[in-house]
Length: 257
Ligand code: PGA
Image 1 (cartoon, rainbow, N blue to C red):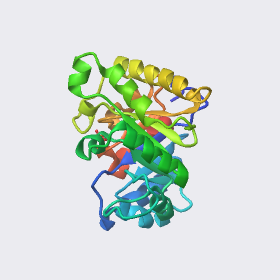
Image 2: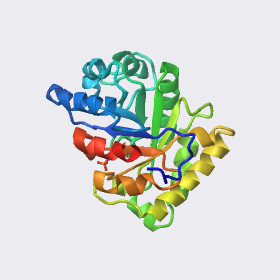
Image 3: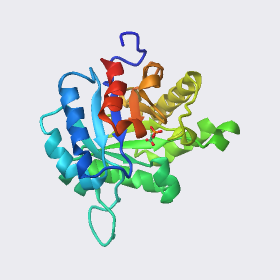
Image 4: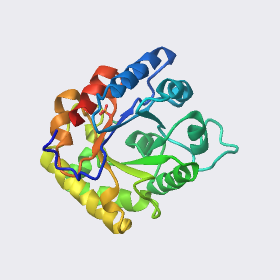
């Protein structure tokens, strides 16, 4: 895609969020992604798969030597302790993860994770040596009320640690109403939001805003990825449903060939 308008300095990132899907029998899908990536199927893009935590260790041995990194889908802010059922950033790192998704709308709404909690988890991710993919996005009602920009602005202000850099932070704009629905914003609305996010991170992280990647997520599919990834300030994708099959995931990443 020679005509992409993203800054040539930013290496695109295509991340797959498997959510609560995946058993050992699905590991060959990860092996297929590794094989396709090793053959250059993702072009200049960096690839990350975020499977359920139970799969990370096995996936890490499959991905060894391949240009595919692994990530978790959430973490606790503490490194260890009496937090039954939780998983720490250090544990994800120990299992072989390089990234962790934080503040996904399904965590914000289903587990009451507010901006402050997301920020604490991002600090934990940095402490453990992980890169946080911090998700922000408005609901349908908020967009219809004309509140999308201020809502996302408040999420960014509350969720991003002020010592973040391009090494430790990726932002994912995921409108809640676009997740798993087949709906996407217009490219005009995505461009407006990503420009806004770029401006906000410039303000919060002086001198670092240009280097931080801003992903778009929400119903990214092979059929719309080319159009979405061409939008200015879109530095890659966070992909849910379409990341579960290697063919679809690699067709999306293939827009960067
Ligand atoms: P979707 O999910 O691609 O299935 O819409 C995206 C996400 O929730 O990260």
